[in-house]
Image (cartoon, rainbow, N blue to C red; front, side, top):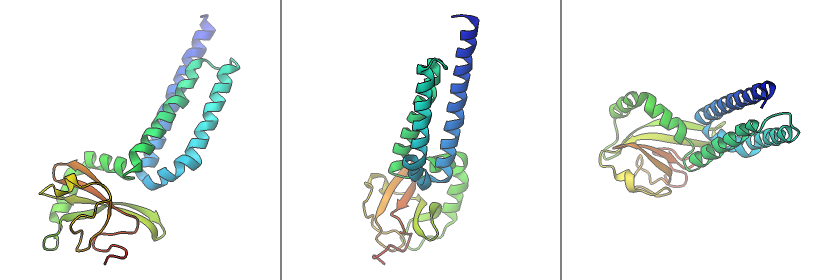
Length: 197
């Protein structure tokens, strides 16, 4: 390999690593700040853009204008997108909740423990939410369950009582012992469940 080819190969590797870093940061940012939006953007915007990027990279490599290291970027970005999409599919707030929990769990624990729960109800706070102008709202609650009764419940299960109403729960994620992120179905809220109040 001559000096020019080695420089071009290094340049392509640096370009690939830079695009992987920038793309991954952008995807993680989108996922953390717009979880449901991320799930909508993947098939309709992110995947088509990534497909064009992949085809262009393959074309440049085949035509000899770029080295094969240029193909690292689209491959890694496809893995990042697919991983986030699968991870978020069952519980759209999973990534943002994990980041929030790692960064400030003591703050959130204090907020929940200060909450005055109704007799026999679990202590909770509204923890994450998204939606569109008052419709299709998804709300996740941070819940303190000292008995860990939520740990064995399957997704979609109707637990004993959430805020005095029987509500179907879309997903329950245990953050640590006694602490859970509980995501209700769309437009269901603690104490008010559509058609069940």
